[in-house]
Length: 197
Image (cartoon, rainbow, N blue to C red; front, side, top):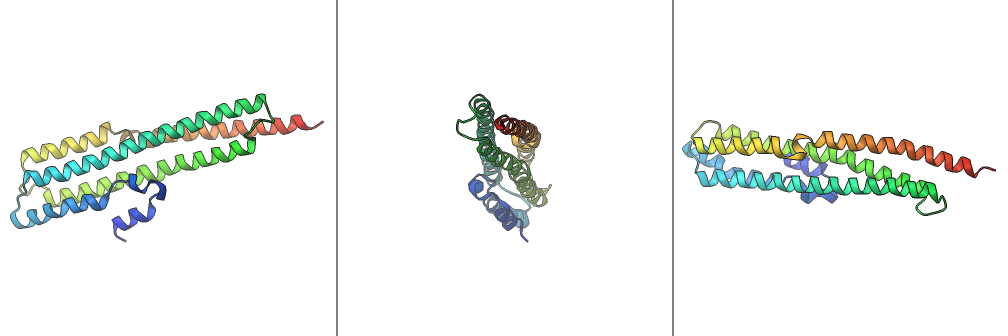
């Protein structure tokens, strides 16, 4: 199966516009490939266009990742607050069951960020950069372009939260959510235990 098709089939549908646009990057690579083959030399403008598109795609992923993580953290804090309110006023809405359901959805989304969103975007970037290196590797690539390539790659790997620490951050939040899930279970048991005459 072609990677582009694999990427499309494995995306979370609600987030589909927020993944790296692999097809767009491959389209930016096509003119470069034909230039490499024909002339063993490529124009700086064509290279820059490819790398600017790559940077834009990486920035799009970064922005969505940070917004999504912020939303998930906010939802998690809200669940904790609601659970404390529920402990004080057991007849209030939402119920312990409602909180448990919301927590399940939150942990599912966190797992998707970790195992799907981050992983697929990293793979797409690696694949398109590998394709670029395959065709550009040394054949007519100017020092300026090589430096630009190194700078862009370094920026992605060192300065983008989703690339460098994304899985670690999400794993920590998942652990907190799982610990809270256990606390919520204990609260639920205590609540029903206290209802017994």
